[in-house]
Length: 255
Image 1 (cartoon, helix red, strand yellow):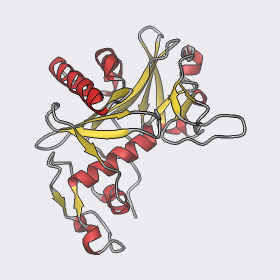
Image 2: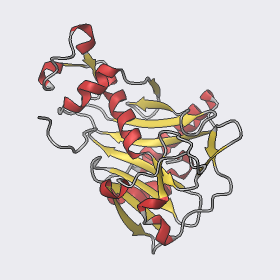
Image 3: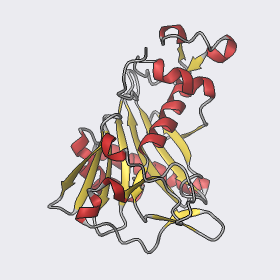
């Protein structure tokens, strides 16, 4: 969710069970606006809070040019200092779904991958999993699974760069509660019809649609990433998503 709308947006998504305190909102909002200026981002977004045993991870992303594929991700333990989160390695992506213990809040913590399940195909130095690497894998996977937006919220310019659509005026109540009017935004795929975002019919299987604020807001709750909520103020351009949880995806147990 855009950091500018943080207070109002968090109130809407609190139906998922969590939010930030007023003090946290004040600190995070100001820190992310500073991050935006330092990195020359067009926009910066609060992505959520991952709960740890000793410390929590606050998550955010911003972009300079492409609003979709140009996103850079950051994390913070104290709300003031934000660190760039690199792309996850293939090893981290492979091992992370097998790790069930909670995050500690220490990015340098080494996770014993032998306690994370059958990792016989991952050996040597590449089998070492730092908590920061696991955090990266969780953030990128969560973003891939859950980053959605109302249809029409983004557009491609003549150079193929995605940006916020200035003509988008929002969805109606009927559209806002229909999965066919929502699109995944983690990847661009231009089709013959001119669409460039994926409209997955399976969205209705992993999202629960609700209406708030006397029918003026559509709220979506993810059924696999518990604590993930997306929202859209109907008939306005405003939309976003946020996650509060332990970084564990609810899936079938690995065989």
